[in-house]
Image (cartoon, rainbow, N blue to C red; front, top):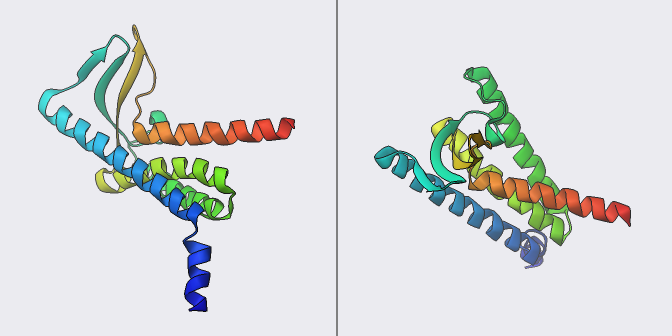
Length: 165
């Protein structure tokens, strides 16, 4: 019984469960949006939302926002391996972090997990959110990229605020 209690207190703490729920919810939201846009693109093409937003499927073989997109297999596999190693490292950091950092890392892990899943399933990540003003278009991105970006911004801001004190 003592072993089970130690396991539960170490690996099934409230913080870990909350982190896992966040990761899973982001992963599911990411999958649902990507699956929907893939089905939409196969049937109707791009979707005009307003003067600043379109939904338009782009297959990204690089990393976030289309950076480092290459057609060469060696680059693709290297980037995929690197993303996997970052996920493993962030998982380790999450297990050692305080509660608020666990939440921030979980945002990143949920998004990174969604994008890694796509890289393994499709050999590319479906990006579809196209923000633009007139002819200037921002990098096309997806829901996973949003959560990765939010998590990184929150971690940086938290660290900047703490370092000022």
